[in-house]
Image (cartoon, rainbow, N blue to C red):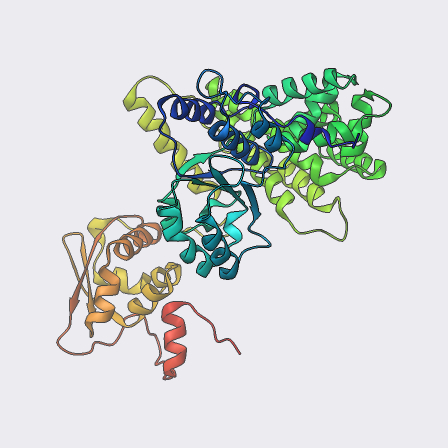
Length: 499
């Protein structure tokens, strides 16, 4: 007898064996019980989560004449047997990756009108349907909307966003989810028992987590990694490059306690042992994520802030392209975390009083702004607003403009002038409405007022007016040379010339 892969051997043959997709199973069972079967389904979701298996279940349930309880295929009749063996001529499975053009769809449209040969209904399963061309989708539309009474369509894809809305709207859509680790482990244990494989629970757990919700991948790993009917954790760990949980925990503790040298030593040991550092980073981020969620539920705000920073830095290291020195990205992340972790803003615990909570948020915001300030900035002497006049602003206006970060706003201020100051209101004059509108836009006006407060130490309201004649800017201490139009545009919009 021909040997077949375990994932094919243990493919669900009835709805009861469909793993981890309870929401889909319940909906389909109700549809069969009530007789409201859709002529077209769209199955989306990650690979190995049961899309094609469910499509075949539907094909059996539609054609089986001895259904149990009105929905469960018997798996004993001739049609069920032929579908299980892949021999039913009226079950047409199409791989859209290699049959993606308009010619293939035209051929399908011609043949679909012929009556089924062996069964009552024809079932078309189109896998990886997102690979079809735009022209092929357009050709399929009418047939999909009004197929012959003897035909059903089931489309499957891992990338639903690539399918036109016109196709989606003509199907009943089901989103398959990643199967959780517990359900995966339970199914793997069942298969190991049926195959007389002595599998360690720790090994099955590791495979369940590694496969990230894909049952087909998980079953394939069990078949691949078992040796002489035994599946042990040490072999799984060695082949998959999994990290020892104690090393993950030890590195985490070193980062929390700022033990830079010890943390770097762990990375060096991993490299010497030939461990997969990318897989290690993946597992470490998972560990910190779990601890972060635990701290959130426990209300430990300060701890959450630290863990968020660790995840952010390590994630950036994991996303870096392959380095000449494989361990370098992780080493850089460790140094950044352990050298700067003490500078994390200490967030005060959340308290019940709404007023006090607001004060805490305000203090935290101020603290965050101080952390990001330029430490080399020289504090300017503060001026009492009661002693301020227009000359006060004229003396400090160049510094105000230099601190403006928005290029277009900075250019507008350079082309304006100080027109007056009265009753805490600073009036800016502009020769053109373009510069006036730019300076008085809500966000830009706030930036000007904030910058003035940083420089002079008091707040003012800024307004803009159009001057009857061009006023020389108070900023200019000496005439500037005329600039070419291209240079002015670059300065306004913050661009650069590309050769």
